[in-house]
Length: 582
Ligand code: G3I
Image 1: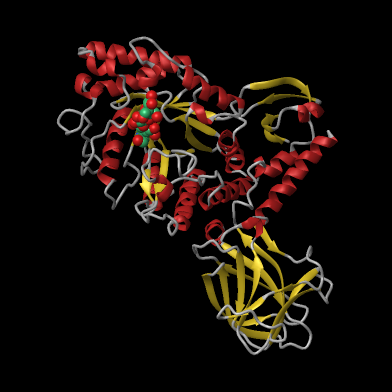
Image 2: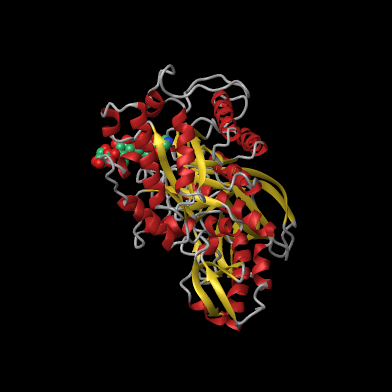
């Protein structure tokens, strides 16, 4: 028992430290031998004689900071050059990191205040110039300075600190990059969005294909460590599951479900009735309306039935709404198919009733499954080109609900752009569905940048991703956000490597967007005080406990409480509370 308490207490300490630890050390000089000198240059890049400007590692005369860099600037503007960690290039460092932080203080005999211009250069490329006024760093008192990093290109591997002040001396120490993928250790479950999302009962999902699910690959690990929900990108669609009539193939879908079960993840089922990726035999069979409905019914019963109890929720119908309709609330809807200029094999042969029936059949096949209608360009409620279609799907969903059809929510695909996404308008949509008792979730999110290099938009993208996560955290009817792919270079979108729509870069390093999502979930998990509940729970009511995984499946019955630490690492529900076992 004591040991378990220790585990939990160390978990708490760690998660709090982590919040402050998103930084990467560039240099603190502590491992550099005293007396080592760093080169200094004038503004033309000419190396300066140490009699004009010098930078030497010394022991902090105040004995507070270990070794520091003693910089002496003579009668010329100069800069000191320091190598970047991990062989990073200018371009890599300036795209991975948001800020640079350092500590500066003044030696004896120097004026307490000084002002001038600070420049930050990566390699030979300029990132930031800030005019600082009156840095107040009296002897014995340090100033912690933080500057935003602007993106630069180039292969140089050094950082240059330039101070436009002349005839000054200062000590420089503790130089860090802030907020980076290096600050995020992907092997530590406690640092992930998944961990915090689990704590507050929200889902961060991702679409996957079976070939991405090897536990020994970085890709597979990225999936189960960072997400708590998966959806088959193609594996559960009609053409994959029923390639010929009444001949079902669940192999690809089973691989996804089994992976999810091994890692306590939930599964979204995607999708049962869609005009696209429906097997050719359905299109070619020249079936009557009755036969088409019988085919759909059989398909839904077999597919939903096969994964009954394992798949939490289904996109029952996908993309049934016609594009380009300027509807208001209460002004009906036009479905995709005949008369809309777009085809739909289901609508064209069955009419609208295939939608109602599909929901009823899915509900009969698994009464516990949560059933969604899913579509694209339906996220923005007002003042947006999507608004008319958003209102149309609202009108349809409301009609279905009022008719007693077992529909539980609307999936907003959200294949969108950094520029086009308006978080407030999405929130309005969530609220409007909340008012009529329907869930409203994000099911296929990607956010492409417009700039071909994609770099300028990444900060805005991160803010918008965080804004969406914030909605997920705040609304009970919006428990889920699913991204449509893991890494920027592997997306259904063309040129995605350039437009960078997702949460991880091609090396599977977490992007700022991911880290902002982590922060958001963490903020709400901390506010909900879930950690302290775990701590309180550690005084056992009984010696034996039942252990469940996050899908509510019993993992162990009446286990000796002190033995729970022998469980494989993961999150469990023990005695009604979530507990992380390392
Ligand atoms: O399965 C064949 C394979 O046998 C063949 O070798 C290969 C050669 O190109 O093609 C494979 O099929 C591709 C399939 O993905 C599986 O990789 C199709 O050509 C390709 O069109 C298909 O694209 C999928 C697309 O839906 C089809 O509409 C994308 O991966 C998938 O991301 C995308 O997902 C949709 C959602 O389901 C619904 N919302 C929109 C979203 C994006 O289009």
